[in-house]
Image (cartoon, rainbow, N blue to C red; front, side):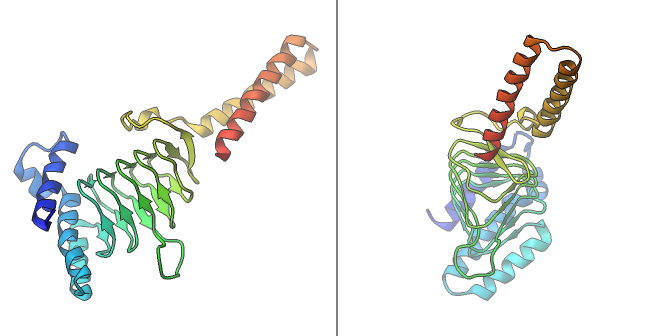
Length: 233
């Protein structure tokens, strides 16, 4: 596809991904992510044609107006949608495949000063939650979902959900479910619940040597081991 076809598809993609978009006036003034991608398309062509300084100037001006920092050397596929967009950073060697959704505050950053591939690769259909930081030359799999404010430093498999600091994969094999922030588990809450239950059981054991209590403690220990195993994945 040509550059004009790509930009036209980016514009149409905004209507598909955001039910709040009701008019062309909204589109003109309230969708910096779409405009940043459109100007990236222009700058990327210039960068690949050898006009690197001019391409950087274009993206510098775009950053001033949109508060979105995209390096023109990054590779961004078709129908990538940056929703809201404020604070998004996409590094020089980042690769984003088609149909990816990126929310505000996402960083695709590097952790090395070496030349070469040092930024993430985001596969088709992935969803990056608001404030997520994805760092280093790692791969986020197809249709993977990254929870808001997560810090991802390890690869995430296809059709998985990762949350936390550092991020851990909590769910695998679910490609079609919508990305519901309110449905993500609260790992800290689960750990505190475990500790409170463990203290209560131990207090009970000290008072009364009850076989059922010991069985309950063993069951809780199995839950804890499963929890730790999931955290290490």
